[in-house]
Image: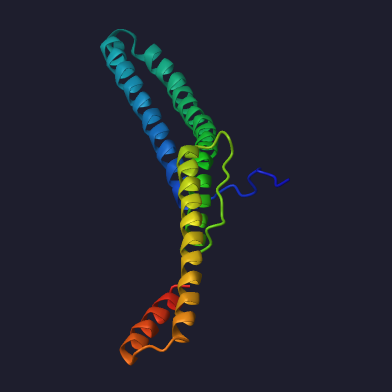
Length: 184
């Protein structure tokens, strides 16, 4: 039985990296925004009390500022790594099926209607894959009917060629034969 485990980390590398970069940018922006909000809230409070306890507040700010900045940086890194893993995993559920369907489209374009889709149960786009499989089945049936009709027409043309026909009828018959044989 064929294993359905993914062997490559990046299926559509550009799409997946762009998704990860977007999430990391949002996380970084929210970390910077929270740091700025905290800074402005704390600095206005510090400046109002600055007149009464300047040295004590300065020491408090000097102690708190590195912890706040370091805490935000660590939080951004940890959340960024976790978010990257989640985005990579989720993008597999979209990029993987899209890649398989794209490969099948290439096969169908080459005339191979026997290719069938198979997606994992928990992948996205399973409904699209089922519709695609229905379309392939219909194409297979139509192709089989077309091939059968073509064979019948070619046999009929061969039979008619043996009959005594006028040159105009033979010319028409030859045109039909060329069109049908070109369609095979």
